Image (cartoon, rainbow, N blue to C red; front, side, top):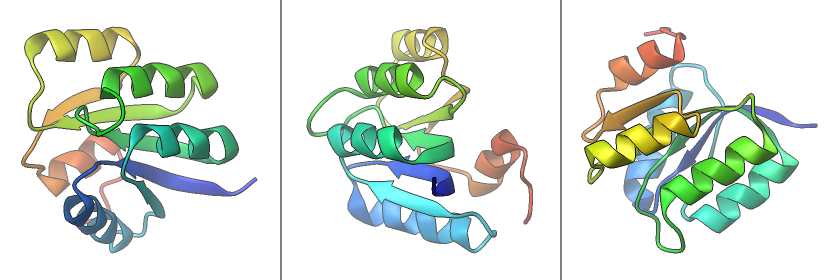
Length: 120
C-alpha cells in the first residue's frame, strides 16, 4: 500500500497547493484534495500519517470528515486548520480525536513543530 506523510484537505486550491509545496520542500510527501468526499475516498485506499483538514469544505463540514477519517484510520493524526473555527468547533474536533486545532493564517514552523518533524 502506498504511504504518504500528509493529506491536505482544503477547498482553497491555491492555499492547499502552496502548503503542499512548502511541506514538500521540507522532505515530506503530500497529496491534496479540495473537498471532503474525495478526501474520505483516498483515506480508504491510502495511508497518511497526517491529515491537515480545513473545517469549511464545499460538500460537508470538516467535523464530519474528521469523524469519518478517524473511523477508517484511527491512527491517522488530524490537524484542523481553519480560518473560521469557533471554540465549540475546537472542543468538538479535539473530542473526536483531532491532534491539534490551528487557526489560519498558518505559521509553517508551528505546523512542523506540531508534527514533530522540524526539518527546517
